[in-house]
Length: 230
Length: 222
Image 1 (cartoon, rainbow over the protein chains, first blue to last red):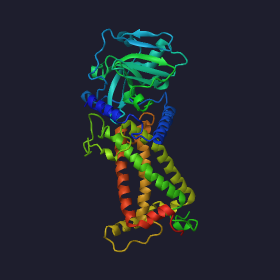
Image 2 (cartoon, each protein chain N blue to C red):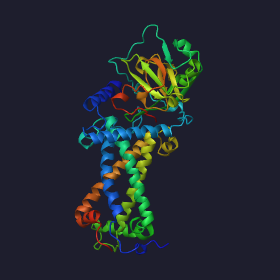
Image 3 (tube, rainbow over the protein chains, first blue to last red):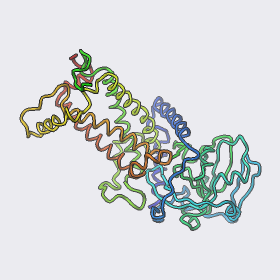
Image 4 (cartoon, one colour):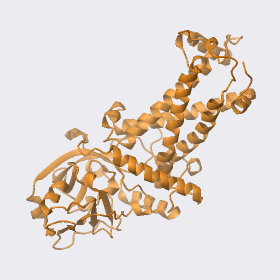
């Protein structure tokens, strides 16, 4: 089941109506924009930093062939030679981290349900480090409000509210179901979170930036909800 | 407290103004919610999680036609759905508050003791298995049953919708529906029931056009 179909469906939709409403009326568009902002506020207000998504038993795992792969490049992007993660923005100790260096930090694993904006769900376990643990390593400054994840997948990126990024179930994951990420699932490192829709979870990670301003996102800038919590 | 239509203050219009306003707003909201919901369904017209689709669902992979949808694309459908949902809920709460506060509930809400037999008799009458309609006052038993059940369906739609919208933040609610994919089943089944209700409602008011007039002008005072 594949990423390519969903991707085409996404792109066709965006091209057919890049506006919010699917129609051209200005009052309707302003109304929907106002409601979209209202709903983003509502989502942030009901979000709890400590409420955890239920951890699921191994028997709930989706067969991996049925877990959709998703990327915006024509082919799953190859890992650049000498890959490292750049961590920057408003931090005390910006730096570059190799996979081995990240794997030396406090590891964590969780098996949770994945919720896609399209309406499907699937289950896998994910191994990595918490974004909040990385934040401690680099020391984020008090004016950080957002966390931006950037990829080497044709410039795909997504910016998050700080609270969701610091949630204990938001990881930088290198493993899926106990093995290293395959290229279709975002190797070598991707964001995985129990508290966001799939398109917020940037794969093929290249950079994590702690910011004071919201930098949007690939789908978010084309009209999809920015907060996109679950 | 006597649960009878007679305990309402008189005279009273058949359809008081608040009921008419709420009714026609609801008509618009339901069309927009259903259309935008179907637009969302197009993105994944299946029931069941990936790799474990529900075998009993006969319409796996059958996407609703585009002309039934509102929003143009997935993001547009979602914006419509989550925008109008607020108005749908507020409208529903106003309706319930008005029923409770005005006493209108006495002549509208299904009361099994009073309306149970009458509803069956009315059904038999419609099915041509009974010659005379059973005696009725403001509404017949079947009307009360329908107008009460649809409120319950509406509430189930709101709750299952919230369970799909925030399966982690509201995970206790989501569990109540058998999980995220269970909540999607309930949400789609609710849409089917609402569609059935609307179809029957339209046929019946077409057969009794006085009721349409009453829902516009308020009807006679009685």
